[in-house]
Image 1 (tube, rainbow over the protein chains, first blue to last red):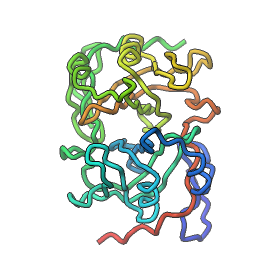
Image 2: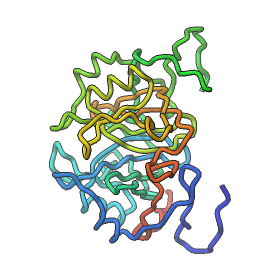
Image 3: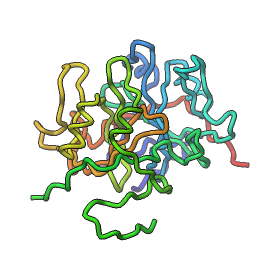
Image 4: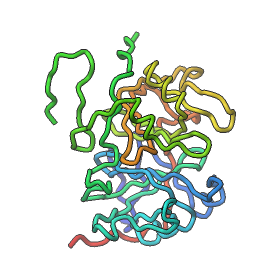
Length: 142
Length: 142
């Protein structure tokens, strides 16, 4: 968990899930990224430190650019067909700490500091409902 | 964080992100779920306990049914157009602990126990790359 102190104002590349992160240039990632037919990519928003998954929303290239430029989360609303700066109305802005991209560049993981609720229902996380039943007992470990 | 002990073999409904979870019947969720034009819904896979986001893949209704029936993760592979039982080949199966659904029923969060790597590259998580540069300094807290 030790982080090398570089004295740089930019945070040094750290770890995720116990592994050292690789740093990739935004321009390179944008060339590699696999947006869907509507030009969108899923963006998972996770609270840094606690690991709480707060929400998932959709970014296009411009929403990612705005997110990186402002340090707050911008998404594309599929229902309203407009850009959406999370928390701009409610006051519950999300401060972006890191943006990770997955192995095949078709999902983003946005680590944020979100002091307030992330869900429009007022819940801390959009994931406040659990599917009941249907799961078998865990298999015995061998 | 205290959990009421019910003595039931099924795990009592617990908390997520510091809030009590609501329990919803699978049949009700299936009626409500908003699959996309291909019949798919994003499924975020998170390691229970650590909060590591391991991967994101796609489920259709049958993949969700298989996941709930077997207690291991099933997805629909868009590139191969076939069902995919994560880890069946590599041995890195994911044991499902809970399945959460988001506020508008178009994203799943699957909490698992995944002892091994989740990424086909051998990484623990598919999110092993960080976008460099582009983020402004964090705003001062007022």
